[in-house]
Length: 236
Image (cartoon, rainbow, N blue to C red; front, top):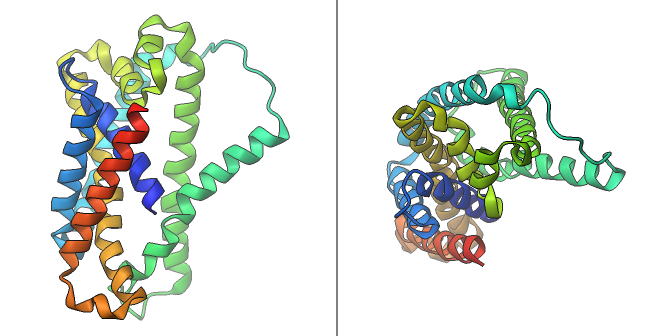
């Protein structure tokens, strides 16, 4: 959960920093983390409302990105044949993204109606994770493979800058592309905010004596940790 939030902060910070030359990754990471912290202060209702709406601009963003840059994805340069090790490594990465949320499920499912079918909840959760994970992982892999053959994409992706690659894909749309990049950077807020909200509950469950400490204190400490590790990882 912590590692996934750190990764989310890095990617979101990179995307936000890519819209202006005077914005560094560090500033982007701090901005995304602070926004996530504020959202987590709203509790379950705020998170639920945010998650219900956040996917809409993301779908629009990726549709536009594929629309303006999709022709570069149709003829990628030759790639090395996949090995068993690389397939297992990639599969474990996908599994890690999904399994990360298992520890948070009880923090939110407690608000569900008790008369709802368990199978219904399972399929909603399964499809809700399967469709975006597989779709976006495939799109990301295709863009990363095609980047060396597109000068603007290669420049944006320099140094593993995922946000720069996304901004380069959207660059043909000019100012609208920058606006979409900002929305894309904010897409990680839901992931980080939910972790901040849950970590305060989990710590008090794990160490009952901490129940006397206001939960927002743990969220603030978690964000501080995310910022430190994210900035160190991104700039090292």
